[in-house]
Length: 173
Image (cartoon, rainbow, N blue to C red; front, side):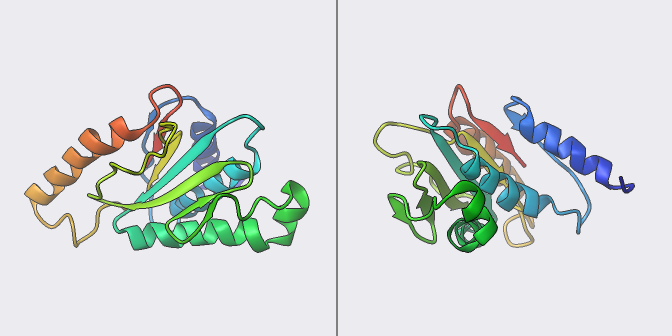
C-alpha cells in the first residue's frame, strides 16, 4: 500500500458501515468526490439485491454540479462495456434524465443543490434517501459570510438530515 492509500481503506470501511452520519476531511486530489459521488453510487446500483429499494441523493454546491455526477453514473451504467458485462443492462429504468435516474433494478439517484427545497422529491410510496452524498456543498459563492455559513448549517441539519430514511438512511460528506 502507498502511504496515502490507508485513508482510502478507512473510507471504504466507513461506506460499508451502518453509521448514519459520516464525515471525511481530506486534501485536494485525494479522490473524495470521485469515491463519494461516482464510485459508491455506481456500486450501490450494481449490487442492489432484488426486492431492495435504494434511493441515492447527491448534493453539491449547485444542482448543476450534482447533475454532472449523475451524468457520470448514468454514462457508466449505460455505456461501459465492463459494467454491462458484469451487471447486465441496468440503464433506462422508469426515469433517465440529467436530474434523476431510476435504473432497471429500481435504484433511484437524484441531483440536488445546496439550499434547494426537498419537498416534492419523495415519490409516491414515501421512500426517503437511503444514501445521501454531500460533496463540496459550500463554495466561495454560498459561504462568504458567517451568516451564509450559518444558513448552510441550518439547512443541512433542518432539511437534509431529516430527509434521509429514518431506518436505513446514511449521510456521507
